[in-house]
Image 1 (cartoon, rainbow, N blue to C red):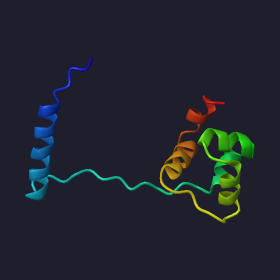
Image 2 (image 1 turned 90 degrees about the vertical axis):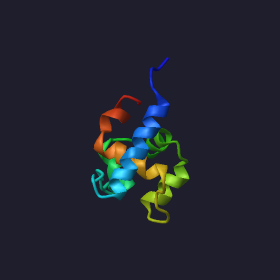
Image 3 (image 1 turned 60 degrees about the vertical axis):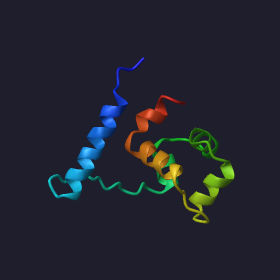
Image 4 (image 1 turned 180 degrees about the vertical axis):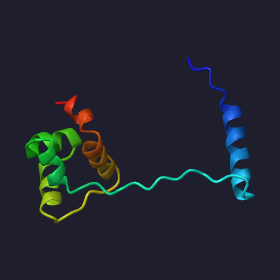
Amino acid sequence: MSNRDIGLEILEGLSEIKKFKSGEVVLKTTELSEPSAPKVIRSKLNLSQPAFAGLLGISMRTLQDWEQGRRNPQGPAVALLRIAEQHPEVFADLY
């Protein structure tokens, strides 16, 4: 069980919003870079198309469409590609 006080966390969050709106604090933001092309990432991981598609939880056809430029990764797929590129050790632990 967690000892979190959700009510307190909500109140702290509301307080932070008020401070931000009044200009008292500046919120931290991070710009996420776009991942490299899926084929480049797959090559760096030294994986076949079936293995890479399996790790991403997508069909081979989808991966082929990405690699041939017929479609672009969207939403969570972009996040997974970013992780695969920036933290390949995570994927290495899976295969």
